[in-house]
Every structure is written in structure tokens, then in C-alpha cells.
Length: 247
View 1: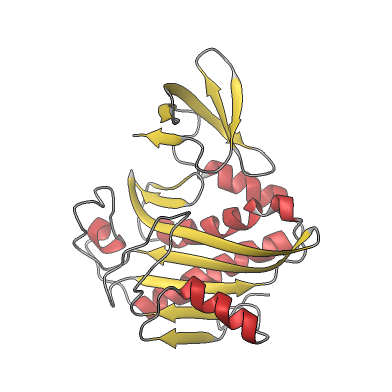
View 2: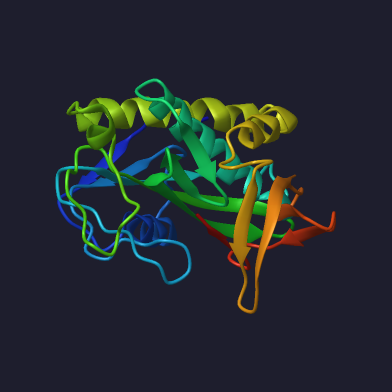
């Protein structure tokens, strides 16, 4: 069980908290819920080849080590849903219009405030271990020009936040939803995630490698694929990164 008082390993600098956690797991047994926190990431990781840029001492960049052996490997997206709800719960207490842009971006309005990167190790048919990477823009006021849709909690609310307190609250929120999964309440997690989805049921443009089309998000399937309904009424399922929302 993850606890808000979980062990925290604080690093002054590291390439990536996910990388550090992965290396640690290869060397020793690590208690579930251990948090790897750094003040500065030199090679922050996003999904695929994406990176995560964060100003030093302004934001939260951390990873949590979990052992979700109760989850079948094919249902690993439930873990992403639980983590998303932990983060949106924290943000919703501070501001409004918080949502999850499938599959792993957290938005305030239509601007990205946080990203999630989960790296799993599978043993047989279940998850053996998971490294939950979170990057949350908290107090940063300026972003590089190429991050046109980035924002921070401070920019939205006009307030400065204590990073240690924010970390404790977010870890507690993730703990709550992770333990919902662990207790077998997967349908509750899934339904709450669907309720937080950005632009669900709204007509939105999407782009694939060869076409631009309009569709409505109708949900996700049991494997985490995006369910889209086109204007023709056709329903199609889209794996991660196979389609891009244009907004």
C-alpha cells in the first residue's frame, strides 16, 4: 500500500527520476511507495522520444515505485487512470477546469500542467513492478517558446506553492486511487477517469499520419485505446500515439 509518509529519496540532480528508479530496482529490493524526487532533471523523460523540461526548484519531478501484481498486464492502463485521478484531485482543489487529455497529459483549461510516464516490468501475465513518473509545473512562470501550451499552477492561480506540501498531497491522492484499484474497484476508477477526459463527447479534429478528420471521444476500451465516433457514425479504436488531437 502506498502511504503519504512513504520513503523519499531526494536527489540534487539526476538524468531522470524514472531512470534512477529503474536502476535502483535492478540493484536492490525497494519498498513499495518509495518516491524518487529531484530538484533538477538533466534528461527528463516523456512518452516515446519526448522529453520533459522543468525549471530547477520550481516544479515537481518525481517517480513512485509500485508493485501492482494484482493487475493483468493487458489492463495496465488502469494504473495510468488511477495516477491521473490522484493528480487531477489535487489540482481541482486549487483551481477549476482540470482534465485529462488522453492518454497521459493533465490540463488546466487547454494548457498542459502535468505529464505522466509509467514504465512497467511484466512477469508472466501480470505487472511485476511499475515506475510512475510525474512532472508537474507548480511555480514556473516562463516556458520556452516551443512549449506554447504549457502552464503552471502558479500562473493559473497567482499563488506560490510549497513544493514539499504539494508532493505530500499528490502522493496521498495517488495512494487513494491506487488502493481503489488494489481493492478491486476498477470500474469506479475507469468511470471517474472517463468523467475527467478532455473534450469527451465534443466534436474535435484529429490527425493521423495520412488524414485529418472530426470525431467525438466516446471513451476508452479495456486496453486503454481511444474510442472515437466519426461524423459517419463509424466507431474506431486508436492505440497510444496513433492519433493526435488538433485543438
